[in-house]
Image (cartoon, rainbow, N blue to C red; front, side, top):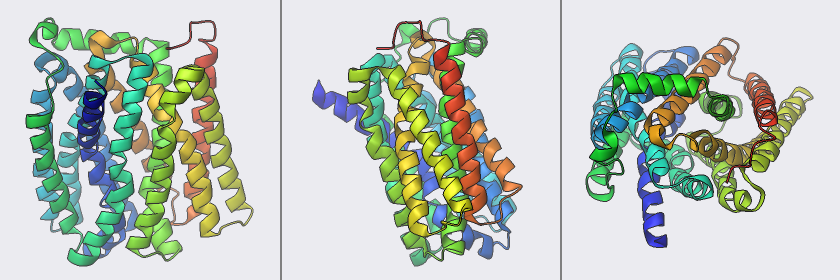
Length: 399
């Protein structure tokens, strides 16, 4: 049982990393793409925003589709579309074409992201689901830790189009995983009654559930804070601090390692203290660290070491927030896990894209807007968690 549990975490983690690989691996190449395609920083960042939006909206389709047709068929369709988008990006002759194919890539990349969460809910709930989700995130960490490093080597050796050829190959390998290593967890008998009317009813039920929306909102704001770092860090660290793409990959990996490393404590902590208490402490630590980082920078402590240390601490706390709130949001909706996972993923990605777009209006390539933006979103994350959990303080603690 333990062997199959770890094997499942490995397979789901690798599949869920396919879409994020298309983000993380090309981050070191953003300045190079701008130079090669004669595009300014804001336009290059638009390729990231467009990916997030299509990635988000696609989940509204894949989640319910996985309830209707099983988990594997939509995975095949989505990953194949992701591969096609990757090829288009690699061949793009201008920034407009690149942005268009990033949209296609995002439409496909949303499938493994949403369906893997539904598979977790098909098989486990409560603390066991949290344990599986944290193990999944450990495997998933191959993306934010290794992808920027790999991307920096690829860009230096073969140019930015090679990054997209590489993620296309990763997508093809993902199709192999779905075919040979993933079992169907939504048998035909459980698909009966799933369709457009039932999907719309499920979405309406979820939107009216304060517990689901509260926990989804907390996770979404946390994700949005990390997306601010994703969209700005390459310009800040490479152009302002003078790091090479390879050094940037190492700096990014340090922050990602903190996030993923601390997330591995969630299973043990939730067994001992319960999900609600872990979330309460984690969001407070996240907000305090990120606000402190912004204030230190505004006060003149602009050294690179200070910047990286503060982000490592803050994103470490965030590593406790994301898996716990995701499990809490899905716990009460096993019969519509695909729709619930889809709506949660869509809200998270739309929130991230909107925050990136808003911050893009004031970004100047320096660390200050990035840190202040992360600090503001971290405070909003804490505030929403406090409001949501305070309203449930008389309810039984989640298992």
